[in-house]
Image 1 (tube, rainbow, N blue to C red):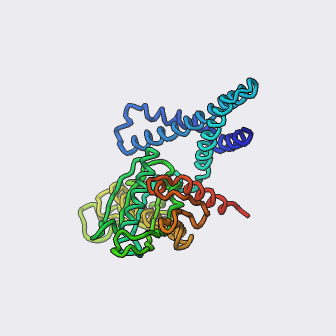
Image 2 (image 1 turned 90 degrees about the vertical axis):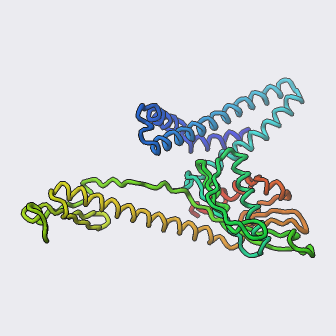
Image 3 (image 1 turned 180 degrees about the vertical axis):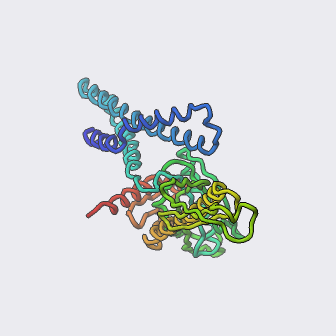
Length: 360
């Protein structure tokens, strides 16, 4: 119980319930605004974030209550020397310890992208038809994991192999912290089994690659504050109407942070030219942001691949074992793993990553 209390205290320190309640209050006010759904995308973002924070608060409050109840139950068992009550308390202790451990892992997800939804791609690699079948097995594994947790999963695209299985697939896990949780799955997965596609029943080793990226919300507008730009006006040049060449209506805008320069002189008035130039500048900044995001995602891919070629082995023959090669976490029940029971692997991977990120 002392260990549970210590773990809960560390979770409460990270979660900061007062701040969490304040953010829920702010979002609740936004959600209650009569014009909320005038912008459906913004409304969806507000309601989704509110639902997530409310769930976080409820989860912490619920486990706090269960720990308090458990302490009362243990005290009662001791006072009355009741074996049945003690057995009930021990069962509850095991359940609470598991739930608290899962909650603690959530607090370890503090990376820049960890809170985002996840975009997962699975590709069959070496191993022919067995690899394609293995890729499909992994797809089902992750979809079942999402189903177990109530996380909506949307398959965007699947390329089917000719004989069996899939060449590749991409799907989204639409849940907060899905990226932070699943990012530890990135790497090459290895399957060893008696091939169901080999007439001679030989053992086959096949491989599938898993790539996990954060879902990035596309921005359709970029604000450009006046103090971020320098506006120069000058007289237009070239042929034009009666006012084009006679006034300082042309506009040159320099974005100070990036050095991007845009000009516009086709409109008749300085105001119109400035508005047009700002639209061009916003388009350039939007493209620049898109390229920067892509570079960040490419860096994430590289980071994942640096863990090594193989990150997990699934052995079905001559023995039954699934083992993560980075954390050494293992289980002798591959059937359960392929049915989505991968939380132990995820937790071990997240804890390993957090430990590696701590300064030595």
